[in-house]
Length: 380
Image (cartoon, rainbow, N blue to C red; front, side, top):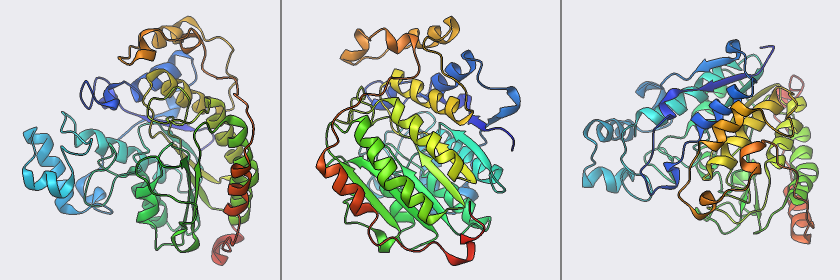
């Protein structure tokens, strides 16, 4: 591929988990509308996401669970047995109109991205990043784990040295667990300490091929930059992966209601830019994010970064109209600041780098495993 590809779908337009759910907001559709309004995507760069089939999904998920999801969508209800066993209709994972089709489309997009990058390239899948999904049940608003399925797609294509990097505010527990015993996939998660799902301690290393970086409340752009330069990039250069998957959840941005971190989208763009020269194959997923303005601006800005496109200080009227059309029932949505309408790129929000962040970076690089010998010479 000579240029990055963008994978999306119209299934997200108007789809909601319910009016009171954090995922009542439009995210992927707004991101795609904003990218198009900016004139940032050639039609040749866009791919419509296919829907993953049950056979594709059972590469990771259990057949009983997939059948239960299909049944829940068809009946718009769930039995007590399926609710208890598979957590459909419970624990924040409601039954809604597209409860199978929507996550299956997200999974299909990430599987397509893995196929498209088998020989190299860059693909952005803002509808992906559902990193909490488990083999036999929904978890954390995630019904399927598209990231796991995409990583398995790369493994099935013969790759043996893959890095998964997760910067969502919540620990990428489902992905780490799926590859706990597979040293071909090295997982890294930067997430808020003490936040649900209450996993991902710095000491948890999955036999050596995982690193967790739990960060404190108020984690700022300067601290993110420190971890990027002193932990993540040295780790990438050491491992020399054949492929990198970046889960780019936007809920670590300060304006998000479900975390207490203080990043701007400058940090998300910075990590994407830093990975570009180090990733022979790069898939960038979406993930969490519960403020419609901060999510769409973040993911659209990442697409610009992947294409090395300049982001103007003020966006054109068509793009501004996309952002002004959004509504949000939370207090911040009733009086949003003007820059949520008129800009995409946040200015970095610097701050002090606390000693715990410096210690965390140093601890992350202790006892790194050697990259797989069979592929070290061929990886970039």
